[in-house]
Length: 161
Ligand code: PNS
Image (tube, rainbow, N blue to C red):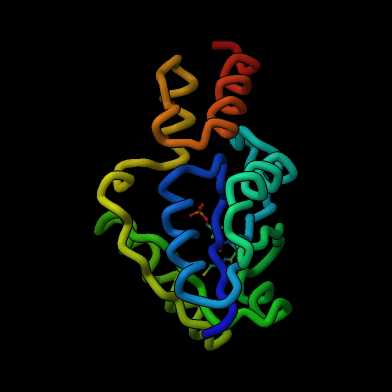
């Protein structure tokens, strides 16, 4: 396995994501962090903003690149010569969500998914909870890089808290 993808929405990237990306970067020669570009109406950050946050957060890993993708993840894998998908697992409910996707992706393309157990200190952290807590005025700085935390604070204010 020389090239792997870490896919996600990353709205925004959290320290939990970065833990998984960093560990993937130690396992394989190259990691592509692939941001699903299908922006939902409820997303806080545009695809371009998510790219900028991830590029900054991953700058310390020379073998990690950041890309946007549209459509099927397995088509992106084929186009980019990616041999494996790396995903973090925080809980049994993550497993229930991820297993069918992993099986579908393997069936469609032969690309396997490798699961990395979440570090315990991040197992309760999700982008969804970060947005909710920040949107209600809570402090989410522990779960984000300083640059991402600043963007989240600004966006929470823009959204009228
Ligand atoms: O961070 P998320 O929201 O769990 O990321 C989900 C993502 C973007 C990785 C997933 O929705 C995805 O792979 N979307 C691409 C569309 C696709 O390939 N769908 C079929 C999955 S079996």
